[in-house]
Length: 259
Picture (cartoon, rainbow, N blue to C red):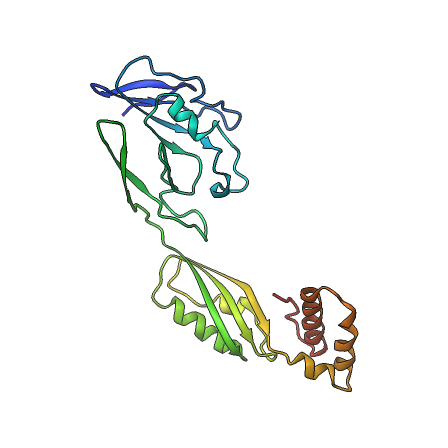
């Protein structure tokens, strides 16, 4: 094992003609670019190992990540490096001259991409063949449960339980679809499901209530008058939310939150 301790690239000879250059990430922020202006002082194939932020392909980078040791992909070629194996971003990426393996164990729900250890095979010309291997010990699942006209919380519980029955670890369930106006959805009651799990998170996604709004607007009733009174709200989505919240309130319901 070799521990890099300098905040600049230092060499370790792996074999004749193959050098690994590594740098230490010694501060929580403001680490400079390791690769700008760097040139190996010897021949052969050169690879690098560092904690650094490639800043060219912004769409795949995580929001809120500070750009520690920022660099551009072109810097690697200019520095004479065949490949760089990097940490910092958790999103896995296999680029031409650099690799982000991603976090080896799940950190949050909604992670995309194959993450884990990367077994790299290096050819004599410096090109790299990569094979990803999962080393995770935690199970994290992201599920969508579509409700189709559910009228009672027991129907929702049955639909969720059916999805959870064969799972272990941590699960996030997003409820989608259309439910009957009579449904009073209490997520607290549903959290008793999945007793075999290490953790269960429930959230409401694009869930709508199947009111016949045109028919309600024709009613000679308080709720009919209320429905008609919202006609002046130009924002269609805002009007929908106001209508559903008001109709639920008129029914004396407590679940007034509208998805």
